[in-house]
Image (spheres, rainbow over the protein chains, first blue to last red):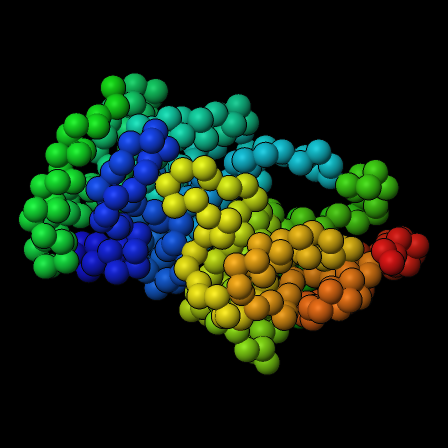
Length: 198
Length: 198
């Protein structure tokens, strides 16, 4: 996975510095896969890696979570020839008004596709309309697990998290490749250990 | 283009019946490319057709307009190896808050990618944040022109519309392929003629 992690670092999907999180907390690492659309080759590599993770799973469709999960979902769908759907962030009030775009049949199993997981809350929220529509969700496939308790939160809600890699694995790989210092790795590891969601 | 139009019809992207439009008007035709994500092969065919339309244009990046234009933009980006960006429908208030996701440099030219055009208003609205960010927009590439005045509206605003096909072309093709009756074609043509946006 060294190549893929180097690609993600070079694309600016994983940045080191000082970043303000949603909670107001300052983080030494910022992971942002929305920028991945700038690099179609990297997006394709990530999609291929996600399809490898999905090999053991059984599913009818993939569901990309807007926004970051949408391009990932499309790339996985095109690369793996899997039908895709997505829950909208807001509902249209005209035409064929829907909460979910893309075809599906109730009772089908969908794998949820997204970029990262922090505390897992946004995943559980995004899965709600899929379940309300009669779809079965068992697995969530992401690119990067920040290892801050998200996997456990999903497990409590009945979902299994599968990630291409964890933040520790990415850090170790980047240190090995001389792209991140050991000091920075340790600083990020401390931050993650100190910021666990229970 | 017969194959592509048949594919779009079979996918349910173009439906005939009675549909309530945003304006409250009942339409005999409903065009909805959001369902295209259900059919990765058709999505890839559409992306290839859009890249053919884009051949004469010069651009640095493509901009997909959420939601329908986003999967189309990703497919064009992957198929043509072109960097993509997209304007968000709402702005995040934390992290690296942005109106536009994906990398770009002011002064670069972007081609706007979307599914259809009706009166052109939503295109002009979606282009605003791109121009505010210093990007140059000259061309808008869509799959289907409903021929209700959108191209003229865009031209007035300084943009050139390019479409894979027009609704008339699609109708003629579907009649030729025995997928739509001549009566339905005439009904749709009357509707379009009677509902022009000035």
